[in-house]
Length: 248
Image 1 (tube, rainbow, N blue to C red):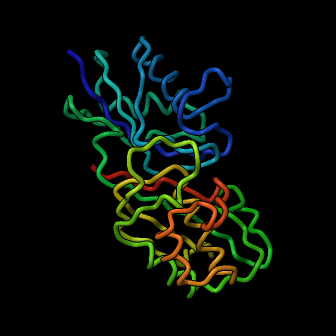
Image 2: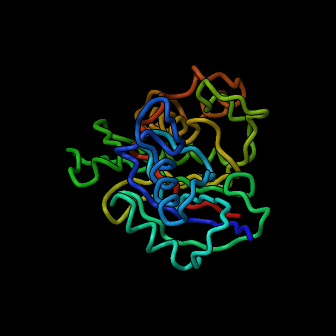
């Protein structure tokens, strides 16, 4: 009997070429590492599906993957068995058997991403892999006000990188919070029903333009209205981004 297994996965994406397997490039990916470990414990190859294709260098605390298997290994054994085979920078946090029609990508209702900024006088060496260092002084009040203007349902065409073939660029951003973290970093947390290619990183790059005085808070409305990528800010580096949670 075939079972549908859902995995919750955390990883440090620094040394990987993103989530999606790209055999032709001969570079390690999160998907390829997981599939190799699953093949060992189930004794057969399996294709796994992730909730989204995180880019090279992007991290995750709550990525979700699913795959179907006829293996009889008890569900509770997947976590320790997989973690014994995976490298230290990839950890399976949970495993559960789910309904046959569950799909990690297509069943997702909401995702939460967090982008971290290091705004100290010098870079924090202990967070260098997980935060983008900003050397120029930031006006965090203006940055937060600009973030508020992006909340809600909008056409985010100006915040999408080229190379995507989505049918619509309309997305609903439920919240976009700016907060100080206990470790001294500034976190920009985005929760929405879906995200376009590089959308969060472009949003962060645009907010930084506001915080550094190169754009005004009110410019956000015009950027949304004109749907022109060239009007938005640069794409922030991948290392500051983390997929925190996927809701179903």
